[in-house]
Amino acid sequence: MKPTIIHIVQHLKPGGIENFALEFQRAASPFYDVHVVSLERGSLQLTKGICQEQARNIHMLDKKPGWQPSIVSKLTALFNRLDPLYVHTHHIGPLIYGGTAAKLAGVECVIHTEHDAWHLNRQKRRLLQEMCLKMIKPVFVADANFVAEQVKRLMPAVEPFVIPNGIDADKFTPADENKAELLAGAGLPTHLRYVGCAARLEPVKAHHVLIQAMQTLPEDIGLLLAGDGSVRIKLQALVKKLGLSQRVFFLGHVQDMKSFYRLLDVFCLSSNNEGLPLAPLEAQACNVPVVLTDVGGCKEAVCHESGELVEPNNPQKLSAALWRLLSEKIDIAPRDFIERERSIKNMISRYVALTQPSLRERL
Image (cartoon, rainbow, N blue to C red; front, side, top):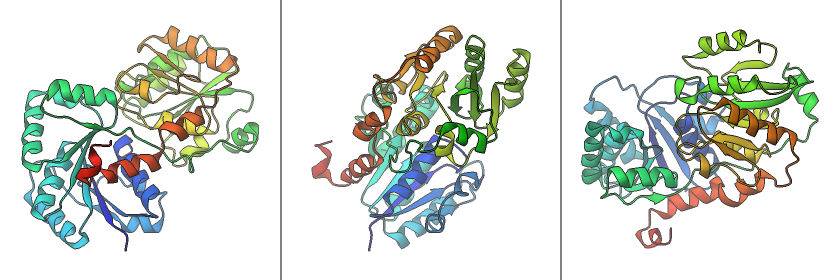
């Protein structure tokens, strides 16, 4: 019988934390019985492409706004039934509910991963988290050195372990097919080379900067935007205003991300804020070089021998970096960086090692 691991997330809407939990579940399934609990019912978009075995281990609660003690009771009953090796919480809500239930159920190990630290700048949120950490006493993990440094600055008593996010290089692989055939199959113009971005269409992702950067790139360069969000209409209006409608394509939510990355010549994030993003890791596993803005943990997500970092909110520098990668031959395969330093198998083994106090000192 395989040991059980339970991840607690706030919801299962498209996003990095949700992808982390579901990818962990899928990649660890040969060795662990991984369950994912969503506090909110919300959207089921992310679960559409998963296998039947994964779906059986996804638990959608129906938490409404405000404090709900019944959620703790439901989680406690679930933990008592499944007897997990450890409970893994992501963000403050799951820490409060999942951590409390784990203590009531007698779960010996709770691991809490901080994927970003921006919310800790708010004193009320920081005091709440500090109180939870004292009560629940989880093993505290930051998913990037950048996040660990922010946490230690804001909460000096906390000493996080750093376990970088990893992705499955067996799932995300380079294309064998001719790229023109892939583009034609996707209904896209085959005469263009493509920059691609996979991110929610929200202000923090600064897609407008990437669209502005497209103005100074040659006309045979297109842009593929995977994702949806509140600024889609504004971005579409900007594309029309700049006369880029024949070169910029809004694809909406993309289920098969591997096929998306295989269409690209360069992947780009123009964000104003990030933790340690997963999308550029997935792109590099498909041997697509990346250009990222130098924010948050992005410097830890780029192969520095094949990709580039640029300052945020600078369309000119972003355009120049994109053109360098599009026009120059890259001798270093970004996939080698992923296999060497950002493997999900290594990430999983390091998390499991945290359940053994004797092994924590080695991490």
